[in-house]
Length: 213
Length: 102
Image 1 (spheres, chains in turn red, blue):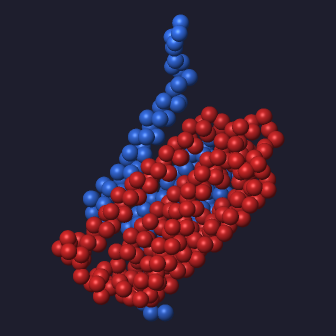
Image 2 (cartoon, each protein chain N blue to C red; image 1 turned 30 degrees about the horizontal axis):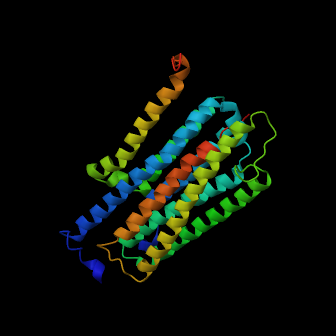
Image 3 (cartoon, each protein chain N blue to C red; image 1 turned 120 degrees about the vertical axis):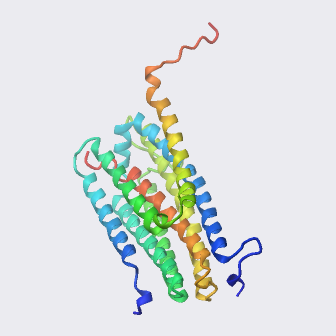
């Protein structure tokens, strides 16, 4: 198996594994700033229109949002477990866990799609026949602009993550990863956990404000 | 089920803690606490994020180099939030004195 030996530029598999993981962390640092810029814009406008943002947030679907958060947290748990299983030479079992996590990702996207459809019918999606009967409609429009851009970009990340988990799962099922080398599973896992991390913050910013008002 | 197919205890406990925190944050969001609602929601989000990063992403087991790289993104994010928000939050205190065309 080619993976059993390190690539030419590395001393051993351990070093190759460390480098792969560090590279993923560099990518995640850029992603932190990418989503961070969006969240910053949200903070600026929310401090400018606190009451309007609370009013707008009340129109988001908290049941779907909460279910989706639980789904992503669970899928993250499964991926972390898959990394552990791969370490213990349980390649096929790791593949099963990765595919289950990917399936949960599909459920997440399906619920998100249903949510978008409901919001479209309530005329809450900017650019798609948006209409809100209130003098503060412009601020509600701002909130839902953030909502659609942030959750849309996040959904793209989830879709990429699903593809990566399925692909890595197939390789694990073929027992391509040995105990000494399971970087692809670890690195794919880091990406998936990061997508989960972003959602944790988006959930708190989008679904929770204004619920007690 | 063989021993190697059981989820490690730390992962199960983290998963349960994450779901419990999710339940707590949704419940607290419905209590009328004013601005404390936002503070609590963001604190719980940060707590959940810490669990994911420390346990699932295995940061607590990593060397200082990985921690530095992982922290770098948040460090620069902190600078960005800090500088931009000091600007927006203090603008009303420092109105611009423009002399264009006068």
